[in-house]
Figure 1 (cartoon, rainbow, N blue to C red):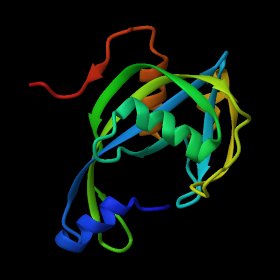
Figure 2: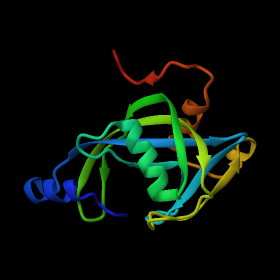
Figure 3: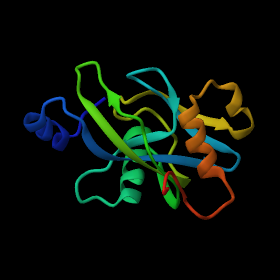
Figure 4: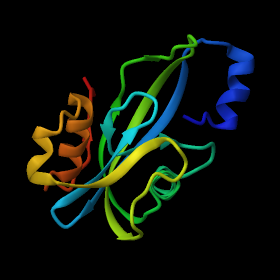
Length: 159
């Protein structure tokens, strides 16, 4: 996975200490299908995800990541879920705390293909068969939040 330049620069100063980062998940829907890709780093099947660049609007980041990772143009429809992902520790010891913003998105154009190497395969999956694909609980929850008919975003915590 390509690490953004701003993260590499921060790592020069903080080493492997936890970095708080904002991330996006773009749950891209076309009819009764959702776009999923197989990650090149761990082989998991997921929606499009990525890190928000400094000064970038999160919805713009979701659209950018969809084009960069899967070659598709999307419309970002709504924020579906805001949640903190448990701390991630990478093989090199770097630690990151991601605040994930999950968006429901609509496909507009482009045939999906793995553009930048972050995914080995990208394609459309029927919503009725998602339970049979072995998608992890966290990604399943992100997809469910995006597909929910409730227009209000879901927020964790707030106690």
